[in-house]
Picture 1 (cartoon, helix red, strand yellow):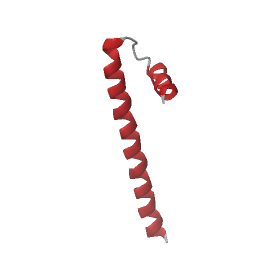
Picture 2 (cartoon, rainbow, N blue to C red):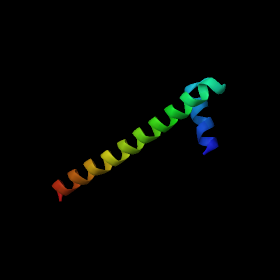
Picture 3 (cartoon, one colour):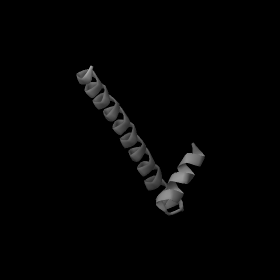
Picture 4 (spheres, rainbow, N blue to C red):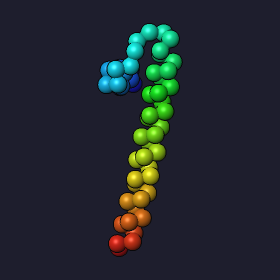
Length: 54
């Protein structure tokens, strides 16, 4: 998990330091949850389209 978080910080050029760490973790969690919701929504939509085709 630390490697994923470090890659996330490097990818977005987020600042280091104690004052920025809380914001970085919050952003990491929010974007992770948004990605999870996007995958679930896509899967449900794909399932509906496949049910219509069948």
